[in-house]
Image (cartoon, rainbow, N blue to C red):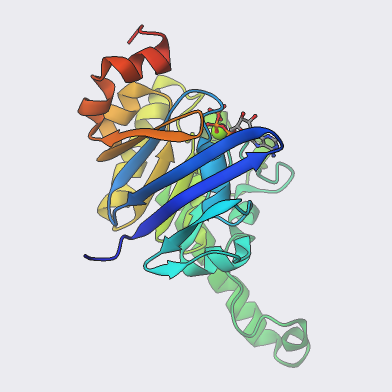
Length: 255
Ligand SMILES: Nc1ncnc2c1ncn2[C@@H]1O[C@H](COP(=O)(O)OP(=O)(O)OP(=O)(O)O)[C@@H](O)[C@H]1O
Ligand SMILES: [Mg+2]
């Protein structure tokens, strides 16, 4: 049997008496867009927190490309090639879009402060390259013309694109996006869907929390349906969306 790209095995998370995740096992295939769906409080963000090292599960483990992530810090997990966005964006609103991307770029060799004293030309060159890289990342998500704008002046849709730019800046291959399409206008929604498909065509793997069934239908190769911390079903978007039992859980039958 070949090794799964991302494998969660028997993950359990307790918050006091609340079982936020129970016996949660699933895989994410390389190069695919997997959508994680389920009602509010199902445990979707909690799964992201476990995969990215923000939360240590009470039971179970996660492996990426055959290597266990258990016990690694969030920074160490980013270094393995996994990066995530946050449901509440977590941008620096008093910095420019460009600076928000710059701080997400991995540190380069030769960036120690001592280098600025003894080899200032070298540091200046490195900084220029970093700015170019950050600008290219903004361009990639369609925000190049907003690079020098303060984040608080960006529209909500632009801020969402910026969160994607920040995960791209880390160089990650597996992107975990927590509700990248929620709260967007129809136009911004089309833009983000096109971006996610483009990232997939460029070789990225995406795990996306998404509530909008139209978005799920349009972008997902595979759907994981979570309910009360339990993985109830996995399958194609069509099979999940047409399942009356799941629709009852998700929408009270009103699909
Ligand atoms: N740090 C925490 N302490 C206590 N309870 C928590 C904590 N984080 C999450 N929970 C609880 O765990 C459950 C799962 O939360 P989670 O945020 O993973 O849900 P979700 O599926 O992302 O929901 P939503 O669609 O609203 O974002 C909820 O009942 C939530 O209240
Ligand atoms: Mg959530």
